[in-house]
Image (tube, rainbow, N blue to C red; front, side, top):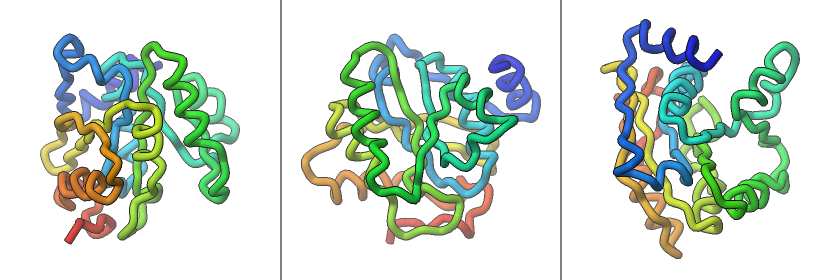
Length: 186
């Protein structure tokens, strides 16, 4: 299934800039920060990229997508349901525990948490990385060029606001499928 999905994305003209994992071993244990998130296509293209890297990648997705007939397929392919309506859903604690087990484990997270324009990103992606001691890796899906790539690894500090600004400044509306749905940092 994954190979077919990857082939379809490539056949539709997307170029996947795959990293050399020997030169970037941190990609096997990290948080992939995916923004702008303005369309369902972010998932379809991003999943193909994540699977192509072979990093035991997972994706947080709102729980509403986990219904028949998609539920089994999504769980089998590393998707993790998130209850966005419950601030105490245990997502951060569960992810930190998973990282504590060691081994290969990465998560792709869209910190906007919705495809609508938002000024404030959710803090969970940073909390997981900081508490688990794993880095943030900016991930770019460029719909204009039909390319997907990764930025430089960012390790969190004790200053959330400074770290957030550093990450957010990397993302431009021109990357988005629907640029009007992305709010850039001023």
